[in-house]
Image (tube, rainbow over all chains, first blue to last red; front, side, top):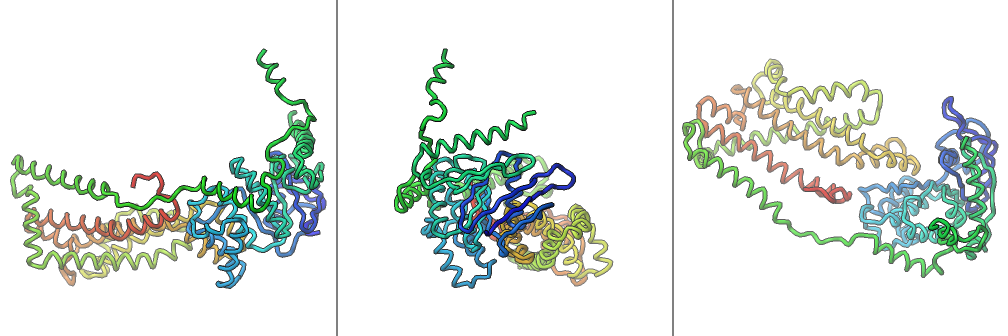
Length: 241
Length: 312
């Protein structure tokens, strides 16, 4: 198990806990969608898994080499072109100069951007930028890839295509992916497992398995989406008082 | 009622309604590649060819011509005595005479040499100091207000002190230039670093950059636009401080610069020399901006996609 979370809790200062008693385990090569409304501490949880924040209680087991991270904002460096952005990630990992060039080209090919390596970030569309960012996070060569709402700012057409793209890349690279989203359809579309986090404090309240049939049968997928949405709304309603 | 009609159109819960985007939208790797390529070309801008925009050249020239004509017309009207307000032609004649005596070349060369040397030394001193102040919070808190304050202090204020310390020598001029340029370059670099979007540092940290790597590979290139405008301002301060120093400091081992020429015009009460010197000082400033800073800045901003929609 690359990631095991046991009774994880986190509070900032004297405030109310953001996370409280989070239990989850994520298997090697698994694609897990972490779903929750605003304020459920999704991003905090990712930061803890990435080792960028320390939990205040509980225990966790994560890969010793850390995790690759992808954000909602592509945050490509504007002074570098697409290939150089990927090469920088390789350089900071300590890859030699000649090898960097080769690997960067391979990664660009992997995200179907073989011809766009010389383009600067401002010349790329939002979807292309996010694919370069994906290639950059793959360049980190970590088994675990954490994604914090990476497609939330994209238009619907691009997002649908990137879902297919991410699924393909996940299958090709065998990465373990934790994908945070507030979009139930996205969670069902991508995850093998959907974990629902409650809000304030965040805690895993229920999980669903998504089978291969859900990927091809829109009716089945729609049904599951409905069930999860109903449960999510129940969680949100609790905060009405 | 229109409301109930709306409800009828909606499918009852649990019905096998087809939702968009719940299942795969492409039918295989090749199809996906094609769809993406299509979308990429739809969403990226076609690069426009670079053409020479003549209005950038003609409009400034026209503006200059209008100003000179207005000046000439004012002189023709004869409101003031000719020796108090000489016309453009008188000044051009004086420039020709100064050129003939080789005084013009000497003055421009002396001042430009001093200005460039002082500026380069300022850059070499200010850059590491600025980076250090921007990256180390306690240093910034301690010295930040002082540096900002120095920028407000007119560098002419240092001239009397410099004359007492260094006498009438080049050292006096350089001291004043450094006191003018260094604070503004430091401030430019600091504000450039302050304006770096926080996600760049975050990405750098996630990618495993060390502190030094973060400073050199991410912070410095990210701060380059702000640093460059600091350099521009630093040059302007160098040039201004230099003129102030040259006007006040005359004699001794001081050479003959543009400021000295200006001062000489005053001593001789020759308005054509005064105006010629002013125009030369202005022309050098404009030429350095046009030939050195503008191309670098334009290239930098264009490569980062920051020029779109500006009126430059």
